[in-house]
Length: 462
Image (cartoon, rainbow, N blue to C red):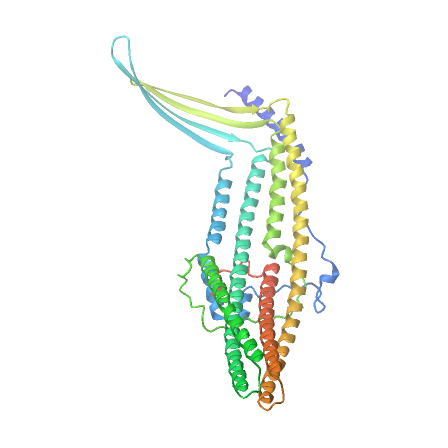
């Protein structure tokens, strides 16, 4: 290249560099969105809201079987595997962003027959070089946006992990509820058979009527009819757990039948909204990173409005019938956008609208997160209160049955009193089991809504 050519290239480069500075000054820097938590969300004991530190919150149930199920699920759940693959996909997409500089080697050989009939062999090898100057930051914006989408995929892995914890824990709580219900029905069946036999003896002594006997038998039949449906619900819960753990139903390999004990939560509901809820909940992180990706997409689209400068060069070596030659070229190239560029400007406006939509979506996601936590706190506190009342109700009704059974044999109470007392115990036991199920599910929901356990790893499960 001649000196004059270099001077021209230098002037072009200087002009475009100045344009890039002006274009860069026109872009607003990214500001991480913030949400002002109200003072009412702060804990009374602390100067700021409290974050639950129980990343492995399910272990507070003190249930080794549940611990094993979750450990297995975190290793083998198929939905979690899909989410992890999407991270790999997002990383690969980032690598597809065109590089600023690249080489393009080429080689070829050609044989031709000359006029004299002899064959001539021509070989050619070239090495091309091109460097696209990213003076408007378009390529950098593409890389940043793709990187943000990698972070979105990472957060979606955390969301999938939380969903898995939610589903396994709830399925296990439901399983134990159904198994407890089955035990209660079998216990009620034995008690009602005992009452039926007592009434039949009393009828033989003319102390009970045929109506009393028939009613006692009806209650026995009613209790027996409920058992098959509960057994089917138990099988359904086991199948659900197996699929969550990536296993074929019936092939889980973990004993879910003994011992049967409903999980009981003991965490105080006075936890408040955590100070870093915005970082802890994966859905909020997804919304924020999506907002950033949309923001950087605007910069990428705006860069297409300006001319693009590139430096390119080629070195070519040829050989023909023993003679060799070398050619080379190096110089700048200036590419102008297609005029009129109204379509590209419309693309910028479209992406600016997407930025505003993403920011609004972030705000909505934060509000929904706060709503979820507040609702979970209220449900958990209410279910704990109901649990204490239900336990007291069961104790009192069991005492009534014992006393009534004793006085019936001494003509101090009627058969109807005994049947009613047993019915009250059955209802109270069912209510308690249902309440324990609600406590367990609300405890699970509270922790998941707080984002607790979103980043639990294998090392935390050991």
